[in-house]
Amino acid sequence: MLKVYCIYPEDKLYSLKFLNRVNTYFLNRIRDNWHCYKVKTNDYDHSKCIDSAVASNSKFILFMGHGRSDCLFGSCTGEPDEFMSFDAMIEQNLISYRNENFINLDNISKFKNKIFFSFSCNSNVNSKNSIGRAAIESGVLSFIGFGDIPTDYLDTNDIPLKAISIFKGIITSIIKKCILKSIEFNYSVQSLVDLIKLDTAKKIHQLILYSNYRHKDKVIENLYLFKNEITIFGDAMAKTCA
Image (cartoon, rainbow, N blue to C red; front, side, top):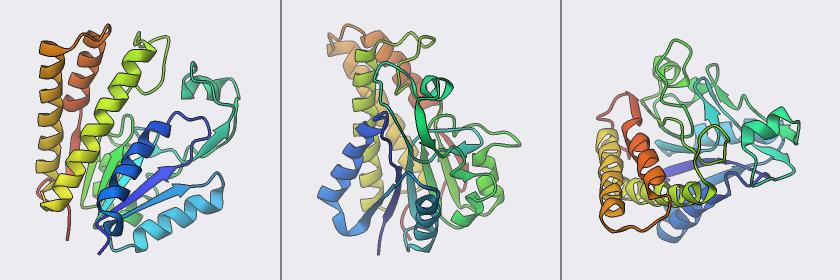
């Protein structure tokens, strides 16, 4: 039985490239229980991906991509610029294809009876028009959302590129290891989130005591926000496997 179905929008701008480490990690460890659908840059493949995920026998859906409080973004293509944020590239029309309405308030119901782990920005918002709340109201078993995850450089966030790079490496390592352990031991959603928070706290402790990173204070600050902003919607006691 397939244990994890991953939805990974194609990103020709490379802002999501670091997440491929998660795919490689699982392929090397639970290849037969892992499927990663890399969504191509066309509308047809986005629809095909959702149908494939819903039809799979996997209870645990992992989404890795951009998003906001009311929807999760799909694939995009354009001219990459490592010094410009995803939002800035949209504003300056540097993206030739983008799907900003991939998984939304209307179609999240297709994931009924599944656990949806939304590793994307601002998916933790609990409001009338938030995707987390809509998911549970539509029959999704459990929805895990995250706060604002700084993976791009922004003039407004005052986080140096080096600190962002370190931060991305840390959270990617934590997420992949915690999900794997939760799947192997059939943890509950609550236990999975508790494990992520515990491992993040341990990493913060290590950085405080032993790190000489130039920008370690920024990394620590954002790791603290990362763990504290994780939100569970729905059944926190649902098991990650059948």
